[in-house]
Length: 581
Image (tube, rainbow, N blue to C red):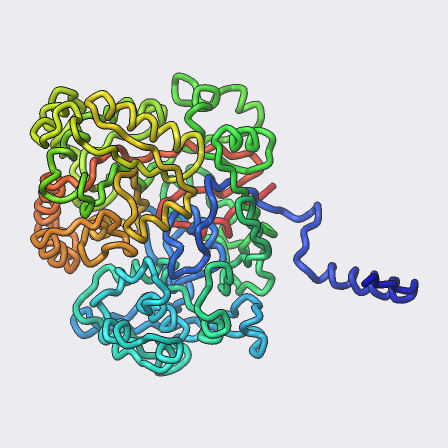
């Protein structure tokens, strides 16, 4: 059917549209938009399941938990975000009483149409913690609360439907009023306040859960400084500044480096400074570089192939880039990488296949890998623990090194001299970029030298994550960006109760490891904790579910018009601090 409008109706509609646009968040040329590259697709924007760094970089601009890390203080310091203050801890560390700020409104959403300007309540945090426990959510964050909150595991067993979800209460989660949250633990959990700074614990209204039938992968309802306005899969994500964002200001203090770097020039000013954010999915490193050079994106981790044109022999920015008003920042990170095995796999897993894993550990030249793929920016790993956490030992050594003869000897011990009768291994790739494929080819070529045949299995990044959640990987590169600077956050990746869809994608299981881990996670930093860390690392080196590679360091370029940027592996809600001149 063809719609025909007379001239008077057209005129009225044009006028109405003009008024509407003046009040909308549509972008004009004068508005300031930060453009940021993503190296792959966003897998999910559900805070119960978005647990990769790509998704987190978007999610944290939309959702807010109770606490956040101070943007400019190192060592990292927690401070209230949606909470009024730090929690009151009582009953020997098993009761947390938290006051929630009043008048924090959610972004507008169809699920809240009956309650415009719906404010956050304490019950909304309970809803989200219950979502992590609710089996149909299939949350990758359940490990954070498993066996830790009174009655939560019982709720997990009983709640089968959304009606159950709503009606079954949890003994250890109470909201005596709209602005008081009480969490009662089964035992002390020193990491809880750090967990309450993770997006996993962002508040969600019950109305939203019911409206979307608990499917929130693309249905966002946050309180953050930016709201989702457009998501084009495989291409881009657009966020607009939330116009009703509460009064909030840029930090007024910071560490010594913050002063030296001039990061306090906007102290006390209202945030966010920009009108919106546009994320661009650009999988190929060279394409990201070209987009940065043409000022289509505002900052960039230097791709390995462009390192030589960006950094001179002294480690400084080249004169050519300085002339283009480009700035360089070098940041240590809490991200590190290793090779993983599925410990339930009949070919590479279990005690009987330890010699195969040892052969692989000795067959890969990790120093060359670091040189080729990081331009020696990566720091060769010497431990399962990364620098920057209490208890890390810079003098620690791994029990394997690049040695082809030892690799062949171990393969012979495994009953497969020169790879004889050993099935072809599937090396799963984390994404479809050229770099991902080149890294996989490197591993394949190294193992071919000792007679191990490898098939490279390519995946999209969301596809890779889905295989990890379902235990469908055999051999792959894995990595971790710490959620908080504690050895517990490393070791929980190998705890048997965290098997996938939790973070233990290797399905590693060791009773002694589990027992020591359960002891360690109750301890504050100190000699006893360090002693247990050493014992736990010995178990991992003996059974070898991981072959360590390197700790990341980032060389980041940014255009001169971008201010207040400071990289962190723990702090993702950084975009509210950025300013464009």
